[in-house]
Length: 590
Image 1 (cartoon, helix red, strand yellow):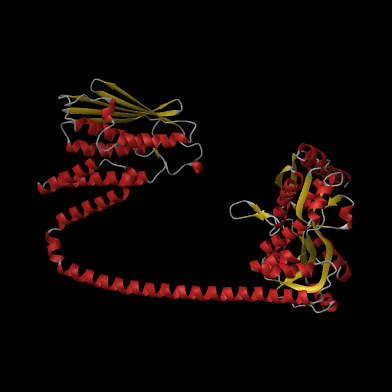
Image 2: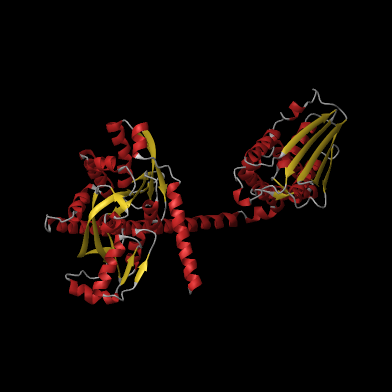
């Protein structure tokens, strides 16, 4: 046991040292330095809790304590012509904030996390004047009966479970109640925040806890299933900011918090973040040594009932809306079913009347249906694949020509290969990356179709090295270059055109080379690198846009080079491998 004890003490000392060093590293100018320089910086440590200090929907800080401390800058500017900067540092652990303030030697470190003023804490840190009354109340699950006296509570506590947060006055009050009424009471700690504790109370029918009155009202408005027991309330001096014992900021802090403008500002902040209808009631009930009698408490009880009633009303309205919506959906479904039955009946009648005609023209109808299906698929994917429209129109005209010529074998073979090409185009167009084998397969389908249209004018070869087939490439990247080269050659009346495509591995890159050479009759105008990029489809421009989009956010770039010599054009692609170092970060827009 001794080694473990020493090790545990060593860990505690290490944590304390880390806490001290954390506070000492922050910007924390003294009041003396700020007053002389007329500028300076302080650091405020905080832990998120609504309505005191928390993030809004846009991620900015708001809340009573945040806006109150920001008002301190305006106060110093107006009264001392001092430009003060406040650095807000979130700790995300309420218990870790206090040791930083207690142990730091930096005078300009403050903390705001609705700290209760207690005699024990006064011995270790300084407090600002209280800005808000402090009242801890006993809260139970909403199904727990209301206790009218201590005897009823003492009888019920043996079946209950306590929840609290360590290092808080809520823990102190709960432990006091435990010692007086049931020392064996089970207590569960939650280090997150007060709302996490109230959530446990809301879910546990035998649970209870101490929380500040303001937190209770906010939780009640949020729909927590809790209730206040009007017994064992604990009043304290109030909530305040804390700062180190050796700090010299006490004069301006006291002046600000005791000023009439600060008190008016705090009053408006409480009404802003707690609601004008309940804010004044909370302030009166929470006031230390309250002299208003039971009037404020009764008014608060009325407000509680109003909140619960409104919550139940909203739930009933929401349920009614859901039922109405469900009824509308059922009516719509019934209408759709009736409509579907009518349409189906009409379809069956029309199908029966046209049966004989469809049998006589079965082959032509089947071919037309295939053409229509391919045309629809093309319309759905044309923007994504950016296929050359001339290829589509020419292919469809070729199919029509084969059908009219009654060449069934060629037309069916062409339709089959054309359909296969479109299926690959649609499937690969939906992918972020594909393999070199897949890209080559798509190119084979495409060039076969074009060679069928131009059997005496086009030759092609596609070579994929054995170790390059599984390498990665952007879908249809090579296809765009090949299509541009093909239309740039044949449309310009070359008698014959050869295209050679190779995929090979070079170092850590996939090298794709597309070489096209023409022979026979030359084009009517000199064909330069610029005219190659100015064809009807704009495929090369599309390829360059895709490459630029890929290269924009990648360290390894895709490189495209072009060479022109006589009637030979060569495009070379250098594609890094792997294409994406982390597929989870792939930009799908590329």
